[in-house]
Length: 429
Image (cartoon, helix red, strand yellow):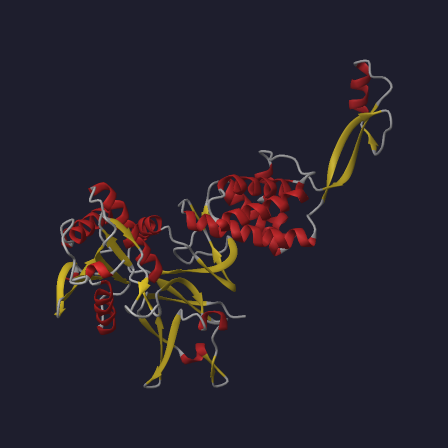
């Protein structure tokens, strides 16, 4: 099989693809697992194939020959901050894999991913039966078996134990370095995840069940790392056993897999992507929550949801961010778009939400590609409704300051406490 070609493309940008990489026997050859999810789109125009990346970032296998590495439009260092504030999660591409290197970064989402991959491989290992190996045993006994160790026996006789022999034999045992590593890693994960999240509770329950198979396996020994990391050990193991052992080593050494870029060779796990539509929205909302607390505005920031129409329960208006005053009245709306510039459809949606919530002003927040597009600017007015936009610089060298400036600007736009927001505002709960 020919090596995989990896093409790098920024999120939401396009790239031309050689038709020979995508067309087989006159038909597009695409992985169904990714084609149906909308991770990219393919267009044929002027005898050229153009692939356009969506909001999902990560290494996405298109087919057996080609993959796209969709990069977020921000520095890697800022991605860590965005991920932490947003409490982001990774989306696993079921049935599709990729190779990962190691990283010293510590991210909760990556730890979750590694834990689920560890459990996925551990299920396979337990189903196939834990690996056993012959382990040397040395004992002094009156019922000898195996080879008599003459020197050790004479030493024991010199100490007065004349009725016993020291012998050596080999026993087929589960208590080997590989299994001790796996057991220790499972116990580390059990302690790391608590019961506050349902997925963590489920993970702990299943890990606890798996640990029953390791009851005859002792605790970790310092030499286990050296023994289990030898290439000849992994060469005779199945890919599943090798993967769970390497994952165990990383978990015990406090390392994580590197999801930010293609780096190969160390470990093959499921491919993952990050949905930046969701990540950017959660980041902005949580950032406003954090800064509202430090600014002591008394405002509550949350995701919105209510009937769109006054006389019908469906459909619903679901603005990304609603801001309430101390009395619980909605005083501000922010609609978040992970794109360089809002379009007409975004304008229509924002104005519709403003009308539904009876809010005079709504903010369309987007990613700014340059300083000229950053900050607050007026878009237009429709009757009593004012539409503004705010460009956020995700490539800033001081992202925390960008967050603070955003919060200060947004909260400054809100009406004073107790002031009417718009006509009929009281009708909106």
